[in-house]
Length: 193
Image (tube, rainbow, N blue to C red):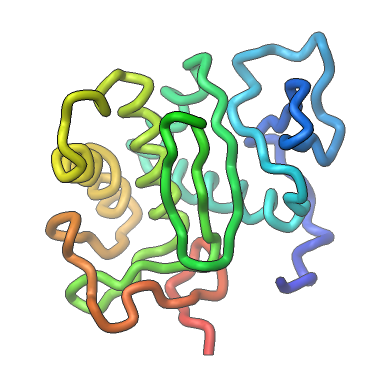
Protein backbone atom coordinates (compact mmCIF):
# COMPACT_ATOMS: atom_id res chain seq x y z
CA UNK A 1 0.00 0.00 0.00
CA UNK A 2 1.17 3.52 -0.77
CA UNK A 3 2.46 5.12 2.43
CA UNK A 4 2.21 8.65 1.03
CA UNK A 5 -1.29 9.01 2.51
CA UNK A 6 -0.43 7.79 6.00
CA UNK A 7 0.11 11.35 7.17
CA UNK A 8 -3.29 12.52 5.98
CA UNK A 9 -5.51 13.92 8.64
CA UNK A 10 -8.10 11.58 10.12
CA UNK A 11 -11.60 12.87 9.50
CA UNK A 12 -14.56 12.30 11.77
CA UNK A 13 -16.98 10.97 9.14
CA UNK A 14 -16.84 7.51 10.66
CA UNK A 15 -16.90 6.69 14.34
CA UNK A 16 -14.96 3.54 15.12
CA UNK A 17 -15.84 1.80 18.34
CA UNK A 18 -15.00 -1.48 19.99
CA UNK A 19 -17.83 -3.22 21.82
CA UNK A 20 -15.92 -5.78 23.83
CA UNK A 21 -15.02 -7.98 20.86
CA UNK A 22 -11.42 -8.99 20.37
CA UNK A 23 -12.10 -9.20 16.61
CA UNK A 24 -12.96 -5.50 16.32
CA UNK A 25 -10.55 -2.66 16.62
CA UNK A 26 -10.61 0.94 17.84
CA UNK A 27 -7.34 2.08 16.25
CA UNK A 28 -7.46 5.68 17.35
CA UNK A 29 -9.06 5.31 20.78
CA UNK A 30 -12.21 7.17 19.78
CA UNK A 31 -14.65 5.18 21.88
CA UNK A 32 -15.53 5.25 25.52
CA UNK A 33 -18.48 4.17 27.64
CA UNK A 34 -20.15 7.59 27.37
CA UNK A 35 -20.08 7.84 23.56
CA UNK A 36 -23.41 8.07 21.73
CA UNK A 37 -24.50 4.65 20.47
CA UNK A 38 -25.97 6.11 17.24
CA UNK A 39 -22.50 7.28 16.26
CA UNK A 40 -21.16 3.72 16.49
CA UNK A 41 -22.06 2.78 12.94
CA UNK A 42 -18.92 1.24 11.46
CA UNK A 43 -16.40 -1.08 13.10
CA UNK A 44 -13.28 -2.51 11.52
CA UNK A 45 -11.84 -5.98 11.86
CA UNK A 46 -8.75 -6.39 13.99
CA UNK A 47 -5.62 -5.60 12.02
CA UNK A 48 -7.20 -2.82 9.99
CA UNK A 49 -4.63 -0.14 9.33
CA UNK A 50 -5.04 3.62 9.63
CA UNK A 51 -4.40 3.75 5.86
CA UNK A 52 -7.39 1.45 5.24
CA UNK A 53 -9.62 3.60 7.46
CA UNK A 54 -8.52 6.67 5.48
CA UNK A 55 -9.44 4.86 2.24
CA UNK A 56 -12.84 3.93 3.69
CA UNK A 57 -13.48 7.52 4.77
CA UNK A 58 -12.43 8.79 1.35
CA UNK A 59 -14.92 6.42 -0.28
CA UNK A 60 -17.72 7.48 2.13
CA UNK A 61 -16.97 11.13 1.45
CA UNK A 62 -17.20 10.44 -2.27
CA UNK A 63 -20.51 8.60 -1.87
CA UNK A 64 -21.88 11.46 0.24
CA UNK A 65 -21.29 13.92 -2.61
CA UNK A 66 -24.53 12.56 -4.10
CA UNK A 67 -27.98 13.21 -2.67
CA UNK A 68 -28.81 9.49 -2.63
CA UNK A 69 -25.45 8.73 -1.01
CA UNK A 70 -26.10 11.19 1.82
CA UNK A 71 -29.56 9.70 2.33
CA UNK A 72 -28.15 6.16 2.35
CA UNK A 73 -25.44 6.92 4.90
CA UNK A 74 -27.90 8.85 7.07
CA UNK A 75 -30.41 5.97 7.03
CA UNK A 76 -27.73 3.55 8.17
CA UNK A 77 -26.35 5.89 10.83
CA UNK A 78 -29.84 6.52 12.23
CA UNK A 79 -30.48 2.80 12.67
CA UNK A 80 -29.12 0.82 15.60
CA UNK A 81 -27.23 -1.49 13.24
CA UNK A 82 -23.45 -1.69 13.56
CA UNK A 83 -21.61 -2.67 10.38
CA UNK A 84 -18.21 -4.34 10.44
CA UNK A 85 -15.88 -3.45 7.58
CA UNK A 86 -13.40 -6.12 6.54
CA UNK A 87 -10.76 -5.17 3.99
CA UNK A 88 -9.37 -7.57 1.41
CA UNK A 89 -7.30 -7.26 -1.73
CA UNK A 90 -8.72 -10.07 -3.87
CA UNK A 91 -11.73 -8.36 -5.52
CA UNK A 92 -14.22 -9.54 -2.89
CA UNK A 93 -17.01 -7.06 -2.33
CA UNK A 94 -19.95 -8.50 -0.43
CA UNK A 95 -22.42 -7.87 2.38
CA UNK A 96 -23.05 -10.68 4.85
CA UNK A 97 -26.39 -9.93 6.54
CA UNK A 98 -26.00 -12.55 9.29
CA UNK A 99 -22.84 -10.94 10.65
CA UNK A 100 -23.59 -7.39 9.41
CA UNK A 101 -20.20 -7.36 7.68
CA UNK A 102 -19.12 -5.74 4.44
CA UNK A 103 -16.07 -7.19 2.74
CA UNK A 104 -14.54 -4.48 0.58
CA UNK A 105 -11.53 -4.23 -1.68
CA UNK A 106 -10.66 -0.52 -1.94
CA UNK A 107 -8.70 -1.04 -5.16
CA UNK A 108 -11.12 -3.25 -7.10
CA UNK A 109 -13.05 -1.48 -9.84
CA UNK A 110 -15.88 -3.07 -11.80
CA UNK A 111 -15.75 -3.00 -15.59
CA UNK A 112 -19.24 -2.62 -17.06
CA UNK A 113 -20.36 -4.34 -20.24
CA UNK A 114 -19.52 -1.13 -22.14
CA UNK A 115 -15.94 -1.31 -20.84
CA UNK A 116 -16.17 1.65 -18.47
CA UNK A 117 -14.79 1.22 -14.95
CA UNK A 118 -16.96 1.79 -11.91
CA UNK A 119 -15.10 3.01 -8.85
CA UNK A 120 -14.49 0.99 -5.67
CA UNK A 121 -16.41 3.71 -3.80
CA UNK A 122 -19.47 2.83 -5.90
CA UNK A 123 -19.09 -0.85 -5.01
CA UNK A 124 -19.05 0.21 -1.35
CA UNK A 125 -22.22 2.24 -1.95
CA UNK A 126 -23.79 -0.85 -3.55
CA UNK A 127 -23.03 -2.92 -0.44
CA UNK A 128 -24.29 -0.14 1.83
CA UNK A 129 -27.48 -0.34 -0.22
CA UNK A 130 -27.77 -3.98 0.89
CA UNK A 131 -27.31 -2.85 4.49
CA UNK A 132 -30.21 -0.45 4.03
CA UNK A 133 -32.30 -3.25 2.46
CA UNK A 134 -31.46 -5.42 5.48
CA UNK A 135 -32.46 -2.68 7.93
CA UNK A 136 -35.78 -2.30 6.08
CA UNK A 137 -36.41 -6.08 6.14
CA UNK A 138 -36.21 -6.35 2.35
CA UNK A 139 -33.79 -9.28 2.11
CA UNK A 140 -36.17 -11.98 3.35
CA UNK A 141 -38.38 -13.90 0.94
CA UNK A 142 -36.84 -12.48 -2.21
CA UNK A 143 -34.54 -14.00 -4.79
CA UNK A 144 -30.96 -12.80 -5.04
CA UNK A 145 -31.63 -11.30 -8.47
CA UNK A 146 -34.66 -9.38 -7.12
CA UNK A 147 -32.54 -8.04 -4.26
CA UNK A 148 -29.67 -7.08 -6.58
CA UNK A 149 -31.85 -5.41 -9.22
CA UNK A 150 -33.74 -3.41 -6.57
CA UNK A 151 -30.43 -2.31 -5.02
CA UNK A 152 -29.15 -1.31 -8.46
CA UNK A 153 -32.32 0.69 -9.15
CA UNK A 154 -32.62 2.36 -5.75
CA UNK A 155 -28.98 2.91 -4.76
CA UNK A 156 -26.17 2.15 -7.22
CA UNK A 157 -27.67 3.75 -10.34
CA UNK A 158 -28.85 7.00 -8.69
CA UNK A 159 -25.47 7.49 -6.98
CA UNK A 160 -23.61 6.73 -10.22
CA UNK A 161 -25.75 9.18 -12.19
CA UNK A 162 -25.49 11.90 -9.54
CA UNK A 163 -21.68 11.54 -9.51
CA UNK A 164 -21.42 11.21 -13.30
CA UNK A 165 -20.04 7.66 -13.09
CA UNK A 166 -20.62 4.67 -15.40
CA UNK A 167 -23.99 2.97 -14.94
CA UNK A 168 -24.80 -0.72 -15.36
CA UNK A 169 -27.96 -1.50 -17.34
CA UNK A 170 -28.60 -4.47 -15.04
CA UNK A 171 -26.80 -6.45 -12.36
CA UNK A 172 -25.12 -8.73 -14.90
CA UNK A 173 -23.87 -5.85 -17.07
CA UNK A 174 -20.23 -6.71 -16.35
CA UNK A 175 -17.45 -7.20 -18.89
CA UNK A 176 -16.34 -10.83 -18.92
CA UNK A 177 -12.76 -9.92 -19.85
CA UNK A 178 -11.00 -8.32 -16.87
CA UNK A 179 -14.22 -7.64 -14.91
CA UNK A 180 -12.42 -6.34 -11.80
CA UNK A 181 -9.54 -4.07 -12.84
CA UNK A 182 -7.20 -2.87 -10.12
CA UNK A 183 -7.37 0.92 -9.74
CA UNK A 184 -5.08 3.36 -7.98
CA UNK A 185 -7.61 4.65 -5.44
CA UNK A 186 -11.20 4.00 -4.21
CA UNK A 187 -12.38 7.16 -6.00
CA UNK A 188 -10.49 6.60 -9.25
CA UNK A 189 -11.06 4.59 -12.40
CA UNK A 190 -7.39 4.85 -13.40
CA UNK A 191 -6.07 1.29 -13.74
CA UNK A 192 -2.91 0.19 -11.98
CA UNK A 193 -0.28 -0.67 -14.57
